[in-house]
Image (cartoon, rainbow, N blue to C red; front, side, top):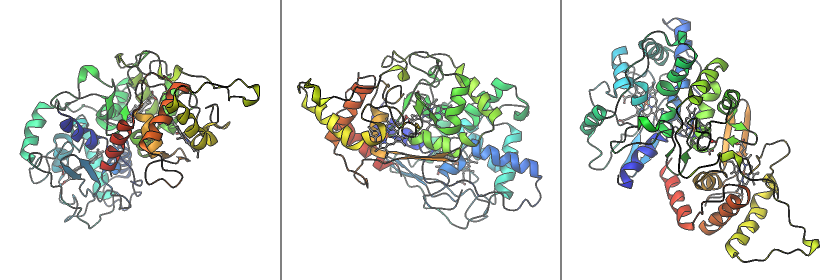
Length: 440
Ligand code: HEC
Ligand code: HEC
Ligand code: HEC
């Protein structure tokens, strides 16, 4: 499939993205029962509606987030209950159609930037609760975001009708989702609400998720959403339920994995707000997803590396400099990373800055997430803790690193602390920089 076609959806779907603030808590609960509203608010958090429907610095749910695609920007719409600018005139039936079928009130088809393919699995009761909360719990905002105008041929909303027929929409679940048993509840949360597969499942030629490679790992814009099937070599088959719960609740598990980029966003806005019971249901379901192997990863990502002895110059035991690019990588590491991650890569003693060995990013078979972390840094608030690593891109306040320098330090880190088997190139860094410039 041509790169350009892949990119659209990837960028669009990776957009569970930055800058959104949390939903304003319920304004006035005119005539809907409080428990229905509370349920709707919780579902909206699990479905992460705010992430896409809020512009940088804008009012929650007022739309205007630009989701960049190679064919132009798809702009999210205002879904506050304002009658003229938002969805105030939507009946429950109109709302249901947008959410589960991707058809909006005027009958036109939504672009799949709106994850209706996932939301199609929502139960009737949950659609009702979401509708009640959007109508009564969200403050109306009177702004109309700019309209989406994609270049030919993507501007044909009509084409979306065909796409919708081909993309295998999940039929809605029946019954009361609150009474589902643990695994069914976990499956429901993962698929109909959290849309984990939107990022972690690869897509076929028709851009629908390949169900036989469910959660087997897929490229996003710049980032790579890793294999999270139960494979013990390529996936997360060695994680316990409690470990996965901790990751989804806080975004950080010592000596294993941290959540940056789009996953950091998903943790911050969505999974960190789920109840303990729901997190356990979600984790239990994810951990039993059939294993899928990945030829680039044949040893668990977190199993690589050990502290590196800091060279003792006094011993006179000098290393030969055969590979200049690796030497410069070590130099760049010492100057820019060692202050936090330690000269030996062990991180800070309180684990605020994580160790770079036994780390799923450095142990991956692809350097993409390492390069993206170096470019973007990490900025995540979850479970009352804010973590920050500066980025080293062109607009960095700490240090701007060139494509060459980033490729060298990434190679140094991958070979010294991690899997070592993939070489980053300056061209790849340049390409990833461009990819980030495309996302808002
Ligand atoms: C990954 C990003 C994303 C997420 C998450 C998301 N949306 Fe959307 N949504 C969009 C975009 C983009 C559009 C506009 C698409 C278009 O113009 O075709 C949209 C359109 C809509 C519309 C149609 C409004 C109109 O008249 O244009 C409704 C209703 C809606 N979303 C509700 C929701 C709800 C409720 C949730 C959470 C359960 C949600 N969305 C989550 C991206 C998202
Ligand atoms: C918007 C895209 C997106 C969504 C939605 C998403 N993920 Fe992720 N996920 C990623 C990316 C990208 C990474 C890599 C993050 C990093 O390296 O910092 C990741 C990393 C992970 C990891 C760590 C894997 C490892 O080996 O370190 C787990 C576990 C995970 N995701 C589970 C989930 C689950 C469960 C869901 C649904 C509740 C989910 N993700 C939803 C994009 C996403
Ligand atoms: C000011 C301190 C600081 C500096 C300097 C720093 N880091 Fe980090 N690094 C952090 C923190 C904090 C985190 C996030 C921990 C978390 O997610 O809980 C992090 C996370 C990471 C991760 C894991 C990201 C993920 O997605 O899982 C990698 C890899 C990493 N840093 C590499 C580097 C490299 C390479 C450099 C130098 C170019 C560097 N760091 C410079 C503090 C720092």
